[in-house]
Length: 256
Image 1 (tube, rainbow, N blue to C red):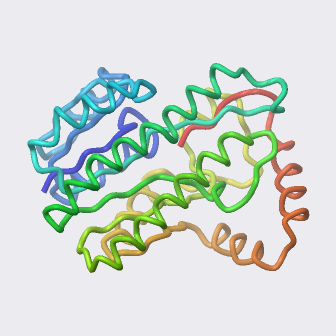
Image 2: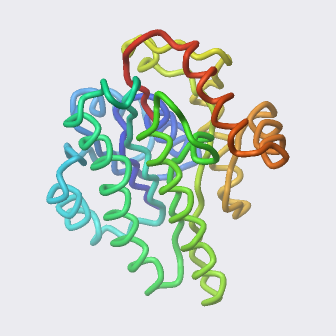
């Protein structure tokens, strides 16, 4: 069994690699920071191949597929992503477009290419990392929340296509709330809710993936919040989201 994990140099992607290796999976790790992935590879017990790739470049996304499609990838985890924080009129347009390139375009490209392969052979797992942000609008993280909504809705649509085709291919979306990673500190973003550990989220997500859950929400608080949102008008949800975002420190980016 072989898994391809993007965004594998840190955070949740790194812990997906660790957990998969613990379960006996061989790995292909892809991210920009090759030295970090090489260090990670040294601690893992299964076979690991490291590929440097800047997924904000569509050409490099396609090249990543070409370099790996001949190795029979059984699981793709689209984990690469980040978010830009701040009022929409003040955030940097170039950085936001780079976020869209990684969070949406790269994920779409890799999903499309591997999805086709998986469907042809009628097997394979595809896990897209979205966020609890996908369930609501997010003032001050507007583009990030919107990008995760894209990931969730794309995944749900493809899951229904697979169901109607009676395919054995799995596709699902992981929608965690805040996850404790180094990026919160680097970006200067403080979350009002204590995040889950990335190791726990990776383990939980894989367990639910193999149970073939389409939308995976780790943690009781996020499950409860998602349930409560169903009974609130959109205006109340977006206002509450704004006040939650205001508790974060000014500036910064969110990873994952």
